[in-house]
Length: 407
Ligand SMILES: C[S@@+](CC[C@H](N)C(=O)[O-])C[C@H]1O[C@@H](n2cnc3c(N)ncnc32)[C@H](O)[C@@H]1O
Image (cartoon, rainbow, N blue to C red; front, side, top):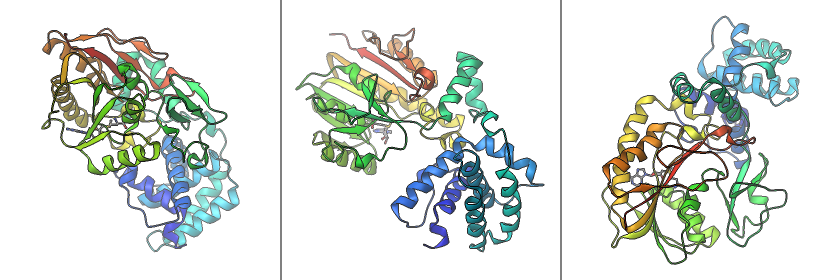
């Protein structure tokens, strides 16, 4: 293994990349053993979930912050020592040797050795505040729901998320899975491909909140359903599993490739279309549309702790304009009396409640009436709101609304 393929070093590269403004999947890593890459990914996720805590521990131990890659390596090691409880000698020597092995970071090895020996003796880690939301989002959510709810959301983001599964009808969940809403939940850290039913395609991974919008459509066998913005296909599989004739459309060919692979593994079928939903039309009006619109994804921070480092308020403005256009276009694909579920994995009302309120104003004859779901709360315009603190084990934040066109 070359030094650059060491999991700790790859984790530091990932953390430094995110601090530099990239989402985790965008940070280039050297070709490496999949198990080492997976370990690097887990370490990076744990470090990003504990970023503020690492700052609180490391800042007083250094006169000034070292270069980004060195700082990231110190953060990773701090998390290994204080969060994951790994043996100090092993973590300190491996981190120091890793820094020494690379010309870029070798000069910092002495500093790292001194700092990490002191980190190993730090007490009170678990009492440090958890990772706060970025200021702009925190202020926004505090205005909506108050400080206590924001703290509960931050506490939910701090926990490593469990593994949620959606089952094909008639299949049984792996042993030990607990029901959550319409899904099944296993503890974090389970090796997915080793679970019974994976190879057979009896289930797929999907957050329990993300599984709820498709249930609202209550599709019947043979109904024509358009899944706009479909990839990588969690909701397409739910619709196809209920016997609907599904067209799965998405702008992104690479993401649709993952959708095809998911369908192949689960033995489900859908027609796949690579297109921009704003330039495309179905041959005939459809019974139902699912619009899982592109959004800020601020509801998924517990699974994507890199997101707060990268997402900016200006991104949301561009997305809200697109969401309104997609919603108008999608409503135009429905037959009279047809139904549409609009959803986003965002915590922001401009991507949820406000989109549906505005669509109801623009489209006379359109009504919203979302049936009560096992988690979350009804919203005044007829939609449904889920927050990450709505389940003790955490759940993605989501907005969803069932809309019906006049018959
Ligand atoms: C929230 S994700 C969809 C997740 C998916 N529904 C699932 O359950 O697996 C949003 C998707 O919208 C797609 N998208 C964004 N703009 C689009 C457009 N104008 N037309 C079609 N798809 C678009 C993105 O490529 C992305 O895959």
